[in-house]
Image (cartoon, rainbow, N blue to C red):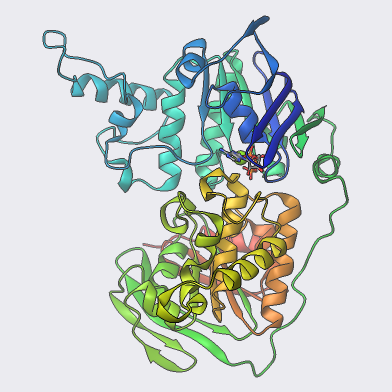
Length: 494
Ligand SMILES: Nc1ncnc2c1ncn2[C@@H]1O[C@H](COP(=O)(O)OP(=O)(O)OP(=O)(O)O)[C@@H](O)[C@H]1O
Ligand SMILES: [Mg+2]
């Protein structure tokens, strides 16, 4: 791809961008949120039309007019945001629009054949998913696997992964890397977008860096330190942020959970959260951390157990209850629980706190809302041409920031952040850590669920480790190490 330009209303997403992929290589594409990575790939796969520039495929100049054409040429993509139909089965999703037909009655779909073919595909990839299950019942990680299988089913020669591991567990990530290595050995070219720069060491041959829609450079992964790639991405040095303020000795206990149970997902969970504390929740995906958060937020019912807020026993039945008690929950699955994609940035921002912005007669005080909205856009460096932009038009990382901002704006005392930096670039991660520091200084309390151990270690005063629905350890943030956490995160009992 050469000299590619792309403009959206109010945004120059790509300026003279270029990219090159060889057969049988894994080529990583990195850059800050909004740098233009996804847009460049959407042009390559015919989702968007470029304004300017040229694309050469196997040496010949091509015009890629639509996604179907890209697929037929052998270019497939696994999107950053999942694109499956939740109410259909796995097999129906894989073969949507090109379902195998019954031989003697072609007006009917041959479900059996479709399930068989899907199973074959999964077997080849060593995936254990039943083709007949409904997609809605799968975890985000498993849904991602279905997307990958679907992309592969087109006999692709170029395969694009847009942040594939953001929602995968460690085991699933390993599995994916094995698949990628196999595909690469078969001569397939792979474009790999990720904010997890450490994983590039394991998977990438070359890395191309983009900044502000422009091409910055391409380096061989072998022999290039991560710091060098980071400085190409952000154009400056990044300093590590650490938790800045310790919890006061006599700090009030703002939240206490006693003997919480819910089936096999939550088993006898008890813990306390103090004022001004960052309580890290570590564990592997599926350990039960999100389940605990959802129960505290009233999104799922509890089977048994007690919840106390500032010493008073409460019964939280709905998220509305929880918000009234001053609890905010930033969910890990932004598409399902977090955002109204078709509404604009400002509406999304003020939605949980709309009461604060009402004038008489129930009208929203637009001026007040806009002022607050602008303040938070600046604070979190949300990249959007205006408050009126639809959220679906923001880059993946900037959507995540909108969710963060809307809960901060709600001014709750207890903030539960579930994977707050997923999909967020290195520079902005630091901004978010700074913000967490500001929040605890203001006297707020934070539960931070994260699969990124470096972030848990840097920010938590205390760390709770979960495994198989149980708390297996509580570790002082100063004494914790990755090894120690991993030991307890894999401590299974029945
Ligand atoms: N359909 C659209 N309409 C308007 N603006 C858009 C659209 N798609 C992307 N943009 C804008 O183009 C810019 C580049 O976005 P893009 O999604 O390519 O970023 P990215 O590098 O993939 O970021 P991230 O790491 O956050 O996913 C952003 O400023 C984004 O808001
Ligand atoms: Mg993107």
